[in-house]
Amino acid sequence: MTAVFLILLFVLGACFGSFLCCQARRLNLKANHHKTLGSRSVCLKCHKQLKWYDNLPIISWLFLKGKCRFCKASIGVAELLSELSLAVAFILIGATFDFATNSIVAWAGFVLTLVFVVIIGFLAIYDGLYGELPANMLVIAIVCSALILALKEYETMSVSGFSLELIWQPLLSVVILGGLYLLLYLISKGKWVGDGDWLLGVALGLALSHPFLALVTLFLANLSACVVMAPTAFEHKKHQIYFGPFLVAAFIIAFAFANFFQSML
Image (cartoon, rainbow, N blue to C red; front, side, top):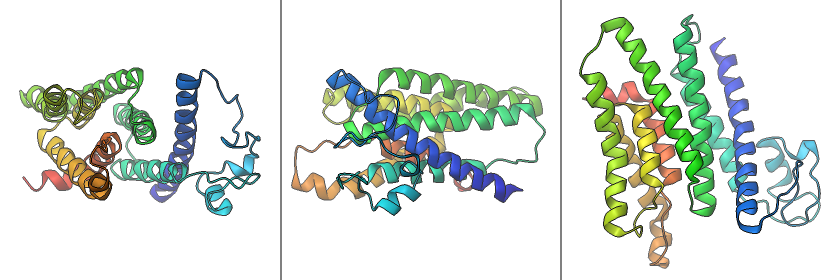
C-alpha cells in the first residue's frame, strides 16, 4: 500500500511541477508585459494552443524532445526539471510519513507539508527563471511553515509535555537560516543575496524547527550553489547567483533525512 501512495505522490508532484512552472511564466508575463496567456496552455513562441496530450508531465516533454509540436521552438529544460523536482520532493516527503497512522494531527501535518512544498517549489521555480521571489508567496510560505511548526509542537507536547526546547530550537533555526541571509543582504546592500532570500530562510527555518537541520540546509545550499554556478561565475564576474532553488532543494533533503542527520549529533 505504501508503494501505491508513493507512486501517486510522484504523479501528483509531477503535475504540480508542470502547473507551477506554467504559472510562474504567466505571472512574470502579467507583471512585466501587462498581459496574460488566457486560460489554456499555449506555446510562448507561436502562441498556438497546446493539446491535452502535450501537457502530460515529463512524458510529453520527452516525447516531443523538448520542442513545440507546431513551431519546433525549444520549450526549455525548466519545465522538465520542475516536474521531476516536485515529483521527487513529494516522494521524499511521503517516505517520511507513516500512512497507517490514524492520527488526524499527523495527517494534517503531512498534507500541510505537501502544501508548503508546493509553495516553496513555486518560489524556487520563479527565482530560478527570473531571479525574483514574489513577496506575497513568501508571506504565505511563512504562515504555512508556522502552522507546520504548531502541529509539530502540539504532537510533541501531547506525548512528552512542554519543554524549553520547543521554543529555542525553532528560534535558533530561524536565526541560522533567515538571520544569516538578512545579515548578508544588509552588509552587501543586496549585492550578495536578494531581499527575499532571508524571508525564504525564515519559512524554511520554521518548518525545520531544529538548528542542526538548519545548518545542514545552509551547508548543502551553499555547497550546491558553488558547485553548480562556479563555472558560470568565473566566466561572468558580475553574474548573480539566485539562492532560492538551492535553498529549497537543500531543505527537502534536510527535512526528508532529518533522522539520519540528527543521528550524527
